[in-house]
Image (cartoon, rainbow over all chains, first blue to last red; front, side):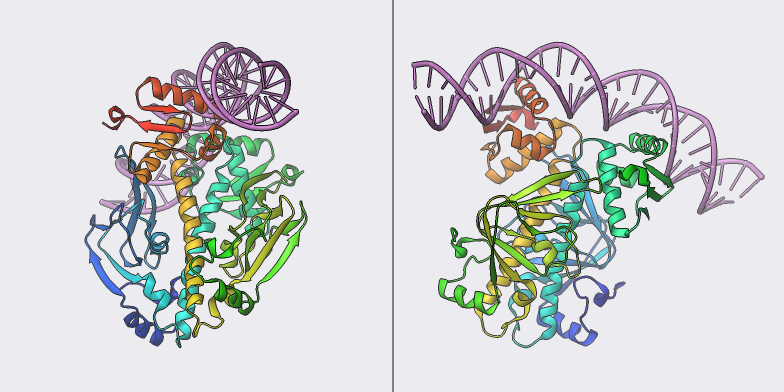
Length: 221
Length: 221
DNA sequence: GAAATGCCGTTGCTTAAACAACGAAAGGAA
DNA sequence: TTCCTTTCGTTGTTTAAGCAACGGCATTTC
């Protein structure tokens, strides 16, 4: 297995005993994939969300010309395909592949939404969790869009830092990315970004060392 | 009023009579705003989704330095704040303002998810609709991110066109944007984009006239 | 300790996108 | 019709970002 279901975002707040019963009641099915195997192909409809139990899955996209790019990877406990499963008739724009030997738990969204909605308290919790998963995804995407709307690297950095500072409640914070990852997140070139960072430091806008940054008051005025 | 609720994404598939009863049962509340008035301030928690009944609302974002940008505007029938309302404890990154005199219907998400889940068939439909609204938002955001990951204007255009062609099931399609809007969507300068478009046409990659585009086979190889 | 690896910051060069400005065409209103 | 506004496409210039390459530093591995 490798993951404790009730610590995942989807099953949070649901007790062990209820969980087992619920999985049965929902007709959850588990499946194993070999490394490199396709879990969900592009252009398909799906009525189920997937939860990675062990291993790792990769979400990628390919355009008409065959060029494909990795959008994200799904760690154990995380959910994928929820966006498509929740919109009836929508086909996938992306492809999900096993990055290692991977096991996945599939849950039919229709059953989550309708079955046994009479008594089960935890079922209501599951629905709420699913909604939270979807909303969190939206929020995450919105953030990324906000931070990449500026055309300049400095603008993007400041937008991102501004958000970090707000979240931290302080002008000092640390970021969960190394330089390359931050550059990828902001959609810019790493070396150029490094350059901009030092320029900003010289100008007194920010101070940083490795992943710890502080916005300077002078920059706020 | 100005809008027929049962034709909106959130209330789709729910009959008139049930709708009235349901709104009462959910404790829906309606409120009018004058042009320019703030409907939802930044940094707040909200437990309710809003549905614009008449008028128009604007969603905007401001950074630490006070610069603010318009993210989208909400037409009658459309839903806003669902992302924040569906994540307990999350505070808004954005601000919602009335662009004109506007009336809004607020629905508590907690009540949508819990109240009277015993009998009401249409209540289940409402929950499913809410989930669809959230998922649609995600999909919409994902698309935009996909189409803006390329660093070149040409790459962004081709990514977008690729998507249009897939959706249309044909190499010929028309786009719902004028040039300025398309440029804004792709995050590039309009004139530079026009330039690139004509270059692509000269090279035989695409053909276009106004908003009608066709990808040329030659470009597919 | 030596070698290898990964991450960070810097430099110089190249290129592509932004920007400003303009004229032509299309559409609407008087 | 004429006038006015909006939208498009084009040009030339400026600027900023991409890109490639390198050296320093820290960490890990043998």
